Image (cartoon, rainbow, N blue to C red):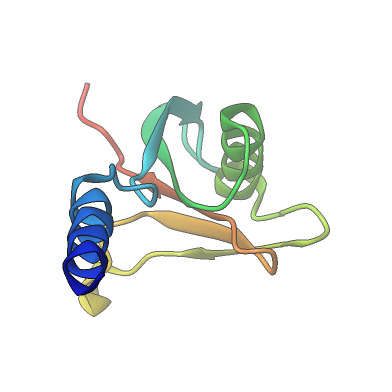
Length: 108
């Protein structure tokens, strides 16, 4: 009986170690915006870092925030600062746990 318990716990532990990570970021492609006062378009890569959000929603929210500094109800967005060690240009999230980030601007 004891040997069976040990074997079962070892199998369970190995399944946890071998299981794929579910918290990996999801790449959602690029967005392009023209900043206010400029004629040059900038491109950013969008990734879903956490939560259940579609890529279309992630790109829409991020594009709206990056271009107009506005975000929809239920979302909160902020710009990243290199001086604080933040590698992202902007991040948007919800109280439900969604976390979307834009990285860039990308070189063309």
